[in-house]
Image (cartoon, rainbow, N blue to C red; front, side, top):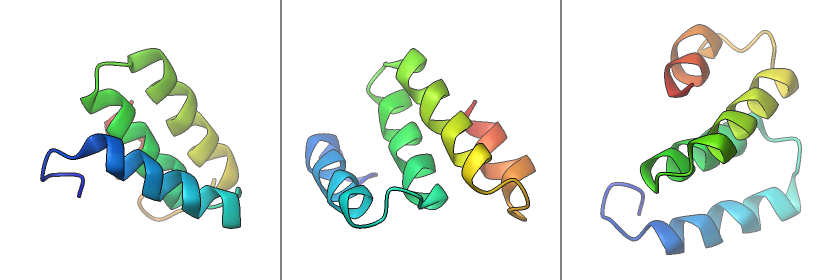
Length: 69
C-alpha cells in the first residue's frame, strides 16, 4: 500500500497496528515514512524520533530510522 500511492489507506493500516501495539517501533517508522511522503515533515520527524526512543538498539536504527529523518 505504501508504494502504490494509497497513502491514506496506509495511514489507516498503520494506525490500526499502533492501536494494538503503540510501542511498535517499526510501525512508528512506517508512519514516519508515510508522513514524509505526504509532505508533513514535522510529524515525520516526531514519528521517527519516537521509533528510535522505542528501539534504541534496533540493528536498522542507523539506517532506516535515521535515513527517514
